[in-house]
Amino acid sequence: MMSSEPIQPQIVAGFYDDYTQKQQKTGTNLRHYYLFHRLKRAGLKRHHHVLEVGCGIGTLTRLIHRYVSRGHVVAADISEKSIEMANKRFGNASRIEFLVTDMQNFTYPEKFDFIVLPDVLEHIPIEQHRHLFGVLRAHMHDDSVIFINIPHSRFIEYFKENCPEKLQIIDQALQADLIVSSVCSNDLVLLRYNSYSLFHKENDYVELIIITNNKLIKPTPISSVYIIFKKLIYRVLYLAYF
Image (cartoon, rainbow, N blue to C red; front, side, top):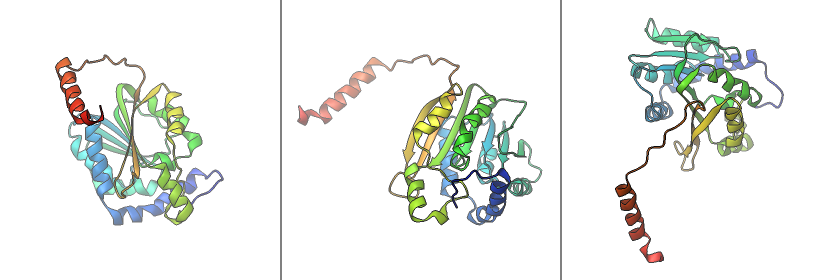
């Protein structure tokens, strides 16, 4: 379902209240496991304080929570029913807190080491992105990382044109320039933009790593021996062209 008119937050929340049934049926799928794998590769540590935006009923949350054994997880979602179900699934588990919020006025007394937006940014109206990154920036320290996963814009455009019924109430094709504009306006830096294939032969997802602009990076030169070795390898590989 798509609309060109602004959609009220309570309508969006209602959509995701109903969406909980699909999440329950799907359970933990390949996407969740792959996202967790990518989070670890991006630097997630067992002692980290993590904020997950758009946690739904807590599917990816469970993987993160089990791994962050010496840290803490704050999981947020616009859907009250999703948070209610997530709380039931986790019972009285320690080191985790579920919050109902659309993130527009989100505040928390501590900074986060990792902020995760797993296939959620495309569901937040583009006009709210600049403010959203401002909210996230206020909850970051110099070494914090924002990890974002979104569907590739070409896939959203394809579904919009050919099978819009598969799209959610808000499902936007996010080009890199739109994201970078909101990121940079909040003193943040895009460190990595990587498209990859998960469910299709074509690249159907994009991973973004965002960091603060406060901490200067001290360059670490690679060994000259290694550089010479690599040069020789490429020279041999492309010898036929010269």
